[in-house]
Length: 167
Image 1 (cartoon, helix red, strand yellow):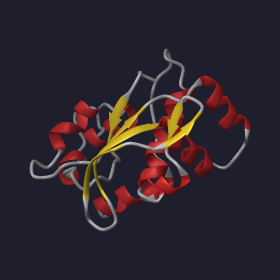
Image 2: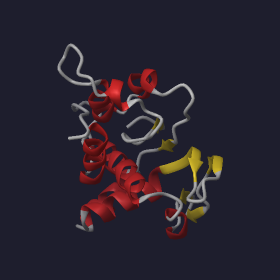
Image 3: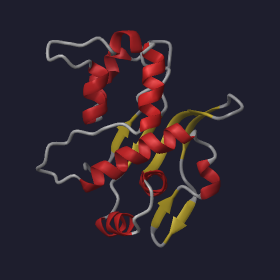
Image 4: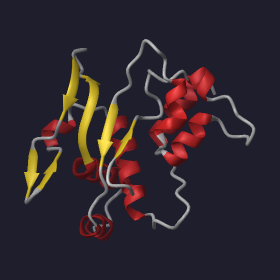
């Protein structure tokens, strides 16, 4: 995984899903390609001009931490949650439950020299955001740099997209 990456969840309301879900020449929609690569440049043309997505700035898990999470043999939700806690460095344009915009948020927890999202701070984000962003961090932390980087969505995100698309 690169040093740092800026991504948005696949079902962010700032995405024009009607346009982003139309298959292109290769048979895949731009949203499908974005999900597999997390290349923000692919989805950027489909951001609704009057909307601002929530951007998650993420970093890779250290190899030691990735091994520890994998070795713990915990369930997928816990793996994604831990990955979110250790891999999110900041969040831009987050709207909290009361509707208040937080232009830039950073985690306050610290373990050793590493910052992390505390258990209490997890409540600032929906379960869907934690699962999808944590899933991306988890998957990218285990992919070999020379391997094909094709990412997949957790079930909750797939269900949200199906609902958006009316499937």
